[in-house]
Length: 390
Image 1 (cartoon, rainbow, N blue to C red):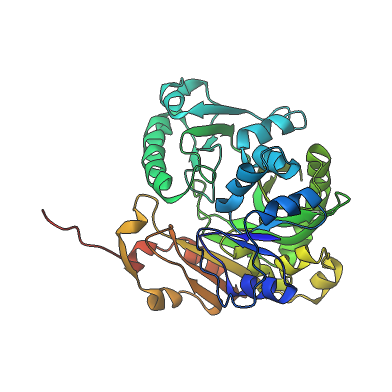
Image 2 (cartoon, rainbow, N blue to C red; image 1 turned 180 degrees about the horizontal axis):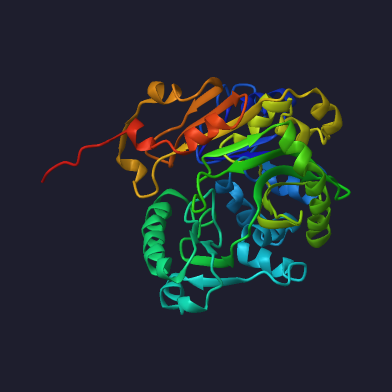
């Protein structure tokens, strides 16, 4: 079963659930492309599915997770979701494994009143329950602290209007010591026996040390070779901690110079958001939805052996966090497309509801195009509405 909710359902996702006749629960009147022939179910059917517990359940969006608490507040998957989604709870459980890692929960008032000289800089401040890079800030020294917290407050005021509390908690935050190393995003699931299966492995690219954006992720033969084996080992650890079974996850990790994996966060019951997991289809032919519902495992040895040397990427083109997306009048998509050499798929997003105005899958021979796109001023492609004078 899959629960489909806003902000976005791709053509690939709609076609996959239709072809496989996966039961679908549709929430909040989300737009589903070509939905004729889809096996729709009622919201109450989720109870029966969870009680049986004998087939996989996936969400396309964190927006829909509240359906678990509404219908099955004591169910195993509801409990696991609550634990993994809350970064503070997740950190507490893993603290036995990562004994030297500093983290602290704080309200907005506590962020403003804390003795900033006591913090182990550099640090990351972010919502305890969050989505994408919204509200995530790196602070390198005490002199930056209070100005950053003020900026965070402004961003949370905007985010609170765009996302439900279950997706972004704009009142509770976590302060944690910066994790040094290369960052990766993984889509995976755990079988009925708790065995991890990796479906996607992407690497995150940053323009500078303070860049917290999700603008560029990429994958390649080299990315798979450098991180796949280590990630499988780590997922076995995660499985033993949380007893995960028939559960999909989207995991973000860093691998330090010593090769140690340190988790950033785990997002339960979904893959990479707004269809970005579909980069795997372009890069190595893995449709994560299909593999999950069929409980299949990619043959990574064969895939790597037959991949070309290209870099496959997705770009999340986002409106600046200081701009309310409701103030955007239009986006010049045609001009923005000119920044890419080989576009595999260009997906305009609905403006005025969410901060991302387009998702672009693209291919290049190396990382130079990605580095250039990371430094683009996206405001030049956005026209804002004129304020009416009273």
